Image (cartoon, rainbow, N blue to C red; front, side, top):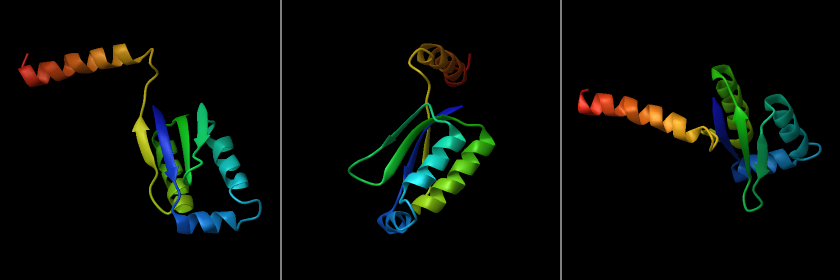
Length: 104
């Protein structure tokens, strides 16, 4: 499944990461190399990394462990689909939900 993952870093953990050799670059680079995200963005106004990444269950657990250790809090995982897939996914979901809600 595809996720938008937010690895949010607390100020305390951010200062610790900045003291590492090379600052945050090497560890963020290893994280990107490991998970091969479709897109990666870093915020300029706070310490956060956004990644769009395909993950299985083990990948979610692994990225949770990495992100929580680096950031000092749990990463946020939001399931996402491409705009081209959205109509099919939502259409199937609406049909299934109606059958339960309407009893048909």
